[in-house]
Amino acid sequence: MATHHLPDHFKCPISLEIMSDPVILSSGHTFDRSSIQRWLDAGYRTCPITKLPLPDQPSLIPNHALRSLISNYTLLPPLHQTISQPQTLISTLTSPSSSSDSKIDSLRHLTRLSKRDSAFRRHLADSAAVPAVLAAVVDPALQEKALPLLLNLTLDDDSKVGLVAEGVVGRLVAVLLNASPDCRAVAATIVTSLSVVEVNKATIGAFPAAIAALVAILRDGKGRERKEAATALYALCSFPDNRRRAVSCGAVPILLRNVEIGLERCVEVIGVLAKCKEGREQMEGYNGCVQILARVLRNGSSRGIQYALFALTSLCLYSQEMMLLALEEGVLEASIVFVEDDNEKVRRNACNLIRALRSNNSNHDRVE
Image (cartoon, rainbow, N blue to C red; front, side, top):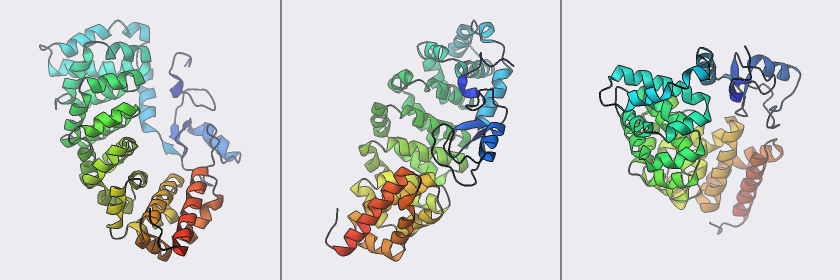
């Protein structure tokens, strides 16, 4: 199959051919399995793109979403044969007389088309389709097909602010509070995508129940929706006011329980919430917090270790009691292992934690 008509992200960065079995490396980049396996078999232990180090035995995680996209794309007719259809599809979607089945069909086709071309996404974002898509998002009969289309529309930064201005946040919160697990997962992913733009973090965080809905999914949800909710919360909480909002919603104990059962993405949120006094207070009051973070140091991934080190540093500088607990738990010894880690952020956070533990241990009056 000719590859020059296909989106670049369908192509393996190594072979530059369309991927038949895309897999995700721990660096977060996707490659065709055969190409990255040849790279690893040749003895390389760095990501071909970022040049960052990989574990001795790197895991290759199937990228089912991208594989499905490539599969769907190759079954579509050429773009020039379908580009005349959009206005008909949009009209079907916006017409009050259209049946649910015809609207579902339009949503499906618009989703496929919008995956293929940023110019088409911009056309769609500027058309009358957006209010109809937002209405479909909260229609139980349509939302499963409407949410992937909405996610596609958020791929372009120019559209992110406009969608928030058009009222997308309220629709997403409604889905997060009352929809199927799959729909909640996509809605949380959309929140993450919108939060790439700084002003949206403030707008979304200030919206009633937005952060509370994500915290509720972390408390009651399952599998993928919990992971996506944690990712959205992490994105939102880079904005300081949202950290306090998350803490007031009871996020800290829920996040720590998720870390205990293996959802490491929650360690990243804990690291961010440890930046605020309210977050540190909640962590100090949670029995076993230091032990949970110490276990991440011993068993976690590089990114999990990075944030566990950061959170522990914040806690030890804040609380003499937490510092003593950390020393009892062997955190100092565990941290020394990371002083020469390949990951620069892990090295830096380990050195900061060691300084905090040694300094606080020698001067019991120091609290930040």
